[in-house]
Length: 89
Image 1: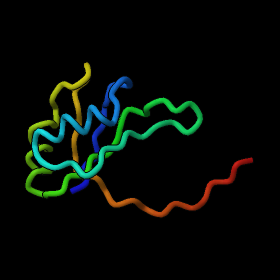
Image 2: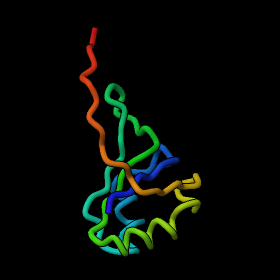
Image 3: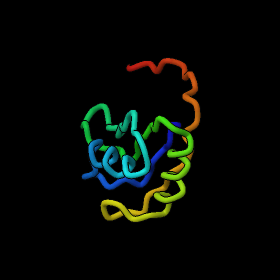
Image 4: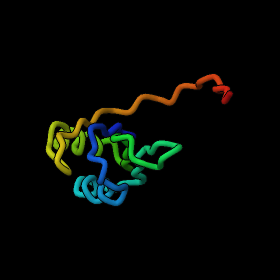
């Protein structure tokens, strides 16, 4: 199960997400999205869990909970949509 996690504090790292969600089951991946140019966190990421049941439990428990000084929003991630290539002029 893949979840979208938003409103992350900029100091939160992938290992922090891994630890937070692993309390609810096996985490197969945890990724924080960063700005391409600066490498700084964009304040959101994705966590994938092996079990849908564990993912639902984590989502219910962690949504609207404070973590790293901010209140998290945890929802089901949408499928990635194909986007046209952007031109760099």
